[in-house]
Length: 485
Image 1: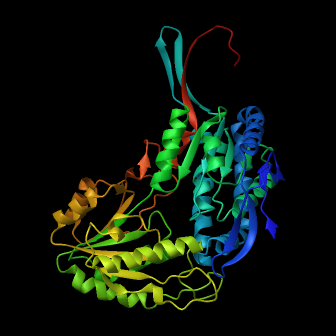
Image 2 (image 1 turned 120 degrees about the vertical axis):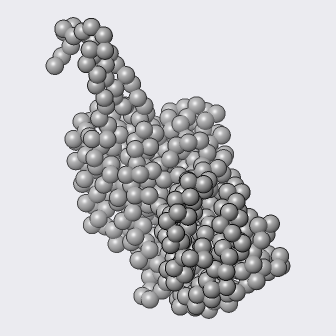
Image 3 (image 1 turned 180 degrees about the vertical axis):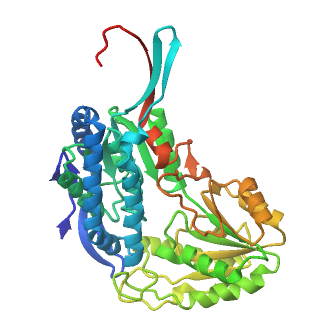
């Protein structure tokens, strides 16, 4: 079986641990590779390699860094299809979705290519007689990223392009469920001319994560994943004196007012709920239908769901692939059963989907008459399950959304400009879409939710990302003191 080694100091490294995990093809259920789980000593070697590379890389000129970023961008573009196919084989999403993931990651690389402009400071002349003041931003040192299975290319690219462009060295701990893309990315960095040790990959589980969180030479950690783990990462990392970006779980609502274009709302709800089999932190999992909208909207959603073709994401004309693992399939299926037992109306039962072999397939599921106390409403399911909650008024819908402990993304569908303006002001959620179902910001803005969807206040990419991976310094300089030009 193929062994997916670590990448340390520019070479593949099997590591010192005898622990390993199995990578599966979710569409067939077959094991495709073995991934070593790093011991603390393996993490230490990766951090040491990154620390050794940091001094030289941090002193590399901005234009040279940008040149390497541009070369990396071109190599990712040239190898985009290979990256997408690796995603499909290990994650399960359909090929078109995987290609879109690579493209969204590339947008952050392109943003980072502008690092000479992004790191420009400020200057004030004569703040005192003969004294000028100016600001600059400098890299932190060794920084780490711990990323989830659902976007094995895009989410790491939210982090490392900006970190590396800013002069840091980077250690990536990708998900052990779909680790292959990270190794191809490491090879592309090397081909682009990035010095060995600036970008490293260690595979593993909590042992590797906890060592990164407590290692004295790691200055900052970025994380995207479940709320429980995000809390652990934030508390452990900050206790160890590190900067931490910790993005947690989500339970995203889509509010539909009676005056909305219901055809558009139905299309948007289906695409946002069932794309990538619902395994997205920005997926819509709750449809809040206001007034009489539900009676008209639910049949439209159900009609569109019938057209969803579930199967192997590598095959043509497939709209939704499998779940990532057998264990996750079993977990999501349990939630469907709990929803039925709690009294919600199961309008579409994805458990009846025709399965191809031993793949981890579950068809799209639709519940109506869901109540907030039910587990299918309360918990982050992270699967193809859409719950319809009925609200009598706009105010009731806003109160429902604002009461949720999750506050990653939300959408409102309406034709009323006044209602849209009220909603974006009154809603207590970090990312808001108006007639846009998945309000993921572009790379030059920053991504992050509120409440239990974010620990701390550091969002990823955009200018917040640049500030996270650098620290500010203010200098004052007297004139005619022999400073070099």
